[in-house]
Image (cartoon, rainbow, N blue to C red; front, side):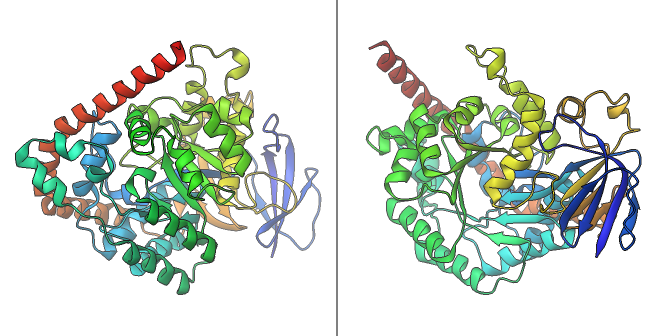
Length: 493
């Protein structure tokens, strides 16, 4: 089918202007950008007057299991989040997994996102049925996704040097008894899911969750599976200082990324989530290997992880995208907010001059073409031949009154509330702010019922996590401080 969107302002590929243009679509692609009023006899018209058309935002890093866990904690850093992970995401049945993914997908769509890189978790290991339930949720909403289940063969307590030994005796045995699923169980589940896959807009990947949480044997096996089945890979690398410190201890002074590279994991199929504490040599390595980074500034601030070196990554030649992180670690799926925070964060480096700051047009490109490159999809820009993944914003909305500059207002003033319509692959998925083919009121009722049931079922795990949390915080903080002191001494020498 041919369609033509008429009367709109259309964001230019460089995001520096938004001229009046008509958009001709053929099937799932953009066919042409035409002067306003051009007649195309066989195209179905859509009146986009009073709208700004932008490429769909692409979420470079999220966790769909967070859909049912938003707002779960307050003064948590990453170590605290991982300590509480058992009750936040535990005890879920297949319907819960589908429901959580639906919530994640709907929020992304309604806030102008058309594709996501999702690292979901199933406890204790991924299952073919669980992954297919998540894919069905994305298919129902209409989003594109890379679905890379988080996998590990070591628990957080086993992976963090000295942590189990640092716990009080009454807590130590229970923490030490926790076990991840066996390596082969995890890999077989992913391979079985690939064999039965039937979701064309959702690609399976694999997500070794944190390099410390995998033995070398496990990490090599993940890469072998990735190579055999063509699975993209994303991993949380150097997100928090304690992880960088733990890596230096465990890998005899090598960085986390250097160790992963020695094991063969880093390449064009690979992207880093967060990367807050990557070194300049790490960035050079990522660039040399053709790998990328998802910059998730909201989560990095929310979890007190720090400010990722976005400008240094770009200067090194690394493909950089932007993500939200999950709703249990960043509490929303708003890519407009992520763009704004990315631009803000770039101004907080002490030695950053104005040329080092992320400009608004550049930030929009990171959240569209940058993130699309991480997912490997041919989208993120409005140009002939590209996928027709489009978002329409209401120029009569207060966010756009007056309309002065498209890029500035996308980053500085838009919050998702002006999004009216979203198209994925030439098909409408959101019309007049309503998700097509989905009862949003029922979705909210189901979410509240599931959350209440899961809170009750996980009450014991929650109480245990609250006991553990102060001891975990003390240990991880000490790791971080020791590593920071050693780095300062090295620089002084």
